Structure formats: structure tokens, C-alpha cells
Image (cartoon, rainbow, N blue to C red; front, side, top):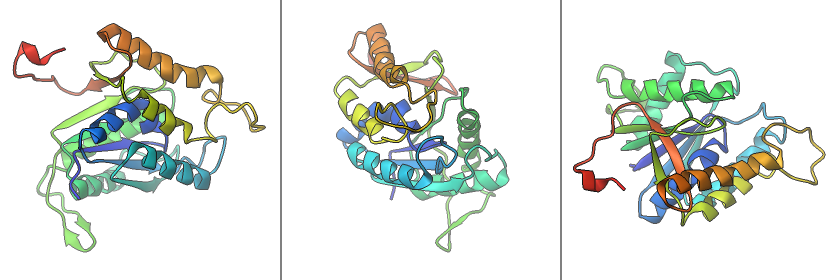
Length: 238
């Protein structure tokens, strides 16, 4: 299956929080989008790997994803090395995305920055002919995505561009809410974490509103780039 967009997240819920609206919008416009979670989020304070799996499946249905896979890397301990890069390369060559979305380049959780660099490096290496990989016993062809964009997470990193998600914020919110064990729940007796506060879940909405305000729309999501963005003319800019 060839995808238009393949989004990578260090943990289930990263993508929904950082790019859920952008993904929902792309799917509504007929694009095929898939998600690859690097870990099962097994070190999360609340819930378990099993509950995260169910929550990720529910979020996938809400977004309308074409496919979602989990590579089972070690939460908190995966590294950017050949072994892990090859697993990412196999996914890139399997789905041949035009666009790759990945974690923030710098963030509070160490897995986010690591995951960002790991996926970005693999995107380059995937285009090298002499790196050989196999999937289901078949040699894979080289593939390099045209674009790699990084969504914004905990830190308020200045975006290089934003996507208007005004008509899709409700879908993003529902996808985030699918992770019931991870975020604010007044009835939960589990330990509190920085992401279980009401202020954190509120920040998902007000960050989107603030980015939207800056570009004259209701809601937006921000992304950073690795190279200049080119447009055909000044009239392509909004």
C-alpha cells in the first residue's frame, strides 16, 4: 500500500497531540495516511501497553487512518543506530510516503528528540541503493520521502509553517480523548504526571487557537522543517 503521508511517533498519542488535525484534514481530502508508533509506551505512569494499544486503535478509527503499526522499540531506551534505522527504512520502503511527519526536534521527553533524529536519518538512508532490506522475503526498492516535517509537542517551538485545522479540531480532540488513561480524568486514582493535569489538555486547544489567531483562522497546527520550503509563486502563500 502506497501512502501519501506516513507519521511517526515515539509513543502512541504523540501524533494525535501534535498533528491530529492535519492528518484528519488530509484524510478528508482523499489522502492516504498511516502511522508508525516506535514504542508501546510501556513506561507511561498511567495505563499499560495493552490499554495504550486499545486506545491507539480507537484513535486510528476516529482519524480514519489507512494503517497503523507499532515497531515495539524499548520505551525510553531505544537509540539512533543501524538496527533501529533499518526497521524505519523497511517501513518507508513498504509504504513509500511522499511526506513523513515525525516528533519534535527538541522536547521535554527524551524519546521525542531521539525519535525525531532517528526517523529523519532513516529517511535519508532509505534512498541509498546499496542499503538492502527485505519485507516478507522480498527485496525492497530504495525510497526517499520528498518532505520531512516535525510537529510541535511539549515545548513551544517556533513553527516554520502552520496548517489551518479549523474544521478538524473536533476530530483531533476526539482522537486525543481516546487515550483515556493518559490525560486528565477527575475520577482517576492513578499518580499525577505533567500530562494528566487539566491545564495540559486545555493547552492542546489553546495552542491550536493561538497559532490560528496568528494566521487569521480559528485553529492551526505548527511544524518545523529541515530545509527551505519552495512555492511556485507568492500567490501560493496565505
